[in-house]
Length: 341
Ligand code: CP3
Image (cartoon, rainbow, N blue to C red; front, side, top):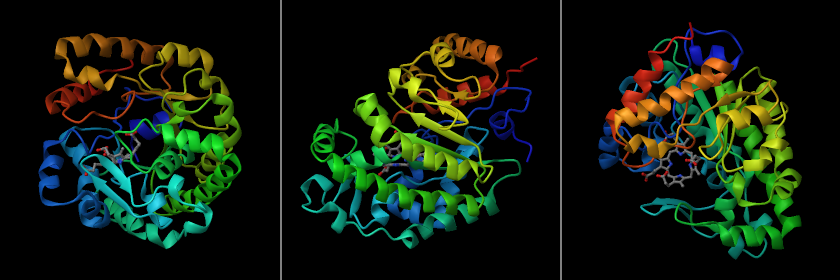
């Protein structure tokens, strides 16, 4: 496959920096917002044809260098038997873990409950334009468990979930094992079905103290990284909000690290082992500014990329709802028009 994205991940020289975006399908494309009028999110995820169609929309509409599977990180708790609804206020679980007496007995992980996703991957690989790599993904155990324990997602600061984690540490460790076990099966199956790269989303890395993270969650990240990399699939880790915790990250955790918009790229570069490539980190809110203001920032990002090169252009977190499509297209075209030489 001729791909600047895959070549960069594998440490090969490229003519220009690669570009893709977190949440590139679900929030910014007029074509997606149209489909959403007709189909629910579950319907789109569960239909291989619709999931494949949405996955490839950003490749056609934005011109990004990679597609990311259209799915969600919460398919893992759903496959463990937790009732899950996606509402206007974000994802809601029927019964959050913090309200269940014996949560370990209440969960019933069934790997077959993820089969609809592999059908979507098959369909995407059939339909994709040549040289379009597909990124597989899942949520990391802390982020997935913070939703499972809290129950209600996007409008929450997860404070009940964090209190529960401090109060039930032994039970938490068992839950981490359960989630990790199913995640490992899920990841291996995504690879078997042909994904070209993998990103692990740890959106809630900043919820708990670093030493708690290092003790309870980081070993799982390493296991997931290992499972992906032993199949020769490049692995990107996105620990959003990890801050000083960057010091805990070693080459055992990732080929590339996706940096959030709170951390300057040069600082991340200084802290991290040179073997780890970097992805990021344009502030997604900048997309609401004028194109002149956006270009000023892009030049700074490119200067960083020129200096270090093992770099993938992306946002410091996903596109925000309401992001002007024209600005997303402007950024993509701008990055693709650069040349390293
Ligand atoms: O481009 C894409 O959208 C790719 C597919 C994708 C979705 N979710 C689709 C989605 C990806 C990569 C995710 C990851 C995800 N899901 C994360 C990690 C990344 C991040 O943004 O922090 C998290 C924390 C979730 C959990 C989740 N799912 C939330 C908080 C929400 C509600 C808010 C929202 O719209 O994102 C969802 C629902 C969801 N996931 C939607 C989509 C397209 C919206 C569904 C709808 O409109 O009803």
